[in-house]
Length: 462
Figure 1 (cartoon, rainbow, N blue to C red):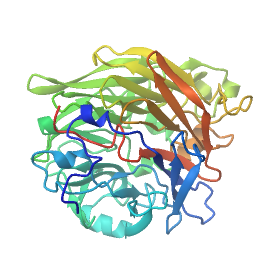
Figure 2 (figure 1 turned 135 degrees about the vertical axis):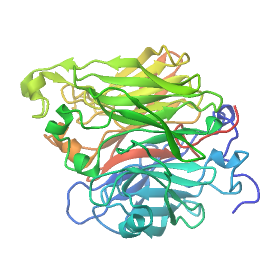
Figure 3 (figure 1 turned 180 degrees about the vertical axis):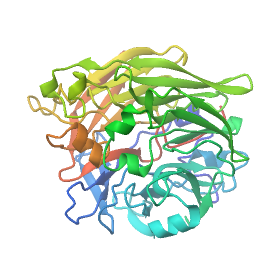
């Protein structure tokens, strides 16, 4: 415990954007081979002044095999400075690292040696199920009064999914968060507007629906998630559900405005059953209720059937497959990862109701297989998938693996895992030609930055 605020905590997004540049990035990486070897947390040197820039600087192996590390997050962040925070003297010291397939949660301490995090606690799946009724933990958010974690479903592979809480100090599971969930059944991401006492959740599918890949029959029947759910954050009760339409399959990443006085955010939809397009929706406060509208549509690209994986051959098109979005800390730029077409898009969202496309980069892709400047002439598989931004909005990091079974389904020819960096300019964005990291036998997924990043912290002051 600290007797003064952690220096990586900032009361407002404006001050957070002035934070010093990160020197390390943490990446969860899983072993797809099924050979009994574990997943790992990889530490990457992202300091351009370092002699090992763009290289692996450390690694912590998990104690078991088969976890499939996916998303993870910090134990504490700037929300600890909120006026009603129950724990104002926490420090950003621990990474909460779940296994999406095993439901095992690892707590890693980065304080003593940030390049060699130590595992200090493991929560076994049986304990998680006994205390919360949930399994397949996914998204981590550090809140003013605890660590919140979303879960895809129940231990039997069905639903409902939802949110549970961990104690800030012991990391013991406290229990299911929802008091009244109403119609909410599917789960994926969650976000909140602390200034409006509102939480928002999105939908993917139950564990059964995702762990072996997309189930075409259920996809075409519109059974994957297509709702946004709004909860009273203090009362923990569902207050409103918005149906984006059954053709909008898989409402995944949620990115709320960082300014706590702004009641809006963006949600990414992976696939439209009408035309294979992806879309980004704006949710916003509309009088006493919440509303949502489509503000970005990304079309599918025509492609010869012989170039497509079996799941897409009948459509003669490659779907964008929007699998991640991220919003800069100043709420001015939105980044979208089109994992299928291999495109990263940059939007000006200074007017969130009318985004403008201002930048585009291609890497990999099901059909294009665009090479990186660091590997000229060498085609890439995968595409920009997880995206993370620095607090000052000047650097963007991408990895290319989505989820083991889905990697195999959409890139059946094989999959090499990589991480790249993009530099943000006044007139768009450019790839850093010196930064191209390969993970070898592991596949990197989510990235977290030392001291915080664009999606790790919540703020209570404008």
